[in-house]
Image (cartoon, rainbow, N blue to C red; front, side, top):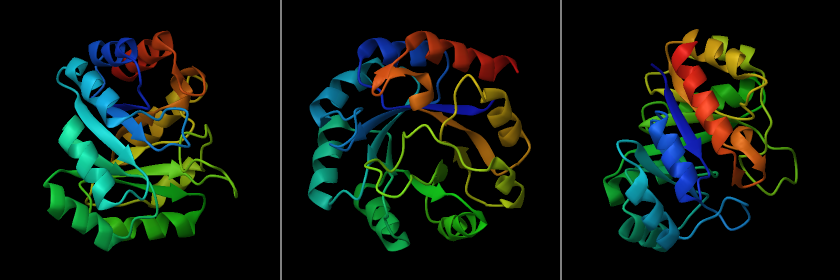
Length: 215
């Protein structure tokens, strides 16, 4: 059974559907430019519905004060660093909060993938997302993919989630990519389970989660 992270949750209904259909991780985004942005107080209320899934606070180049507020208010199970955080910053965050850290890394070509693997052994989980187009406001959740054939060259000791533009149209290919590489343990779904930016489609969440369990 692969891990599936549903990211960008902002309603109790979406959290409960993701939970009830077997999501392993539930992500809450703290980035004001994102249509999926929530406050620490909103996230605190949402995580009371998470069940056994792991709650993930997703931040972008957040400073210590911002992380302090999120962690003390929401009390997440994990932190996700989705900006340009350095390896040293990953170490600092892990040491400061004593929480597992997911480091998201942007990939477009083989050089990007090679740079991504420099974080191997530093974070507890790596997340490979498609590199956004130049000038994009969001570092992730843009509904675009990268060339998954690049994953043939991926070999890490740190487990990896595949992200970026995964939805009903390509879920089979995403699952095949994950199952074809022992470094990959699962997928991350965000825009691919939405009816509009930031609006989760609970039917799509349920359907794709069920598909990951049956194919």
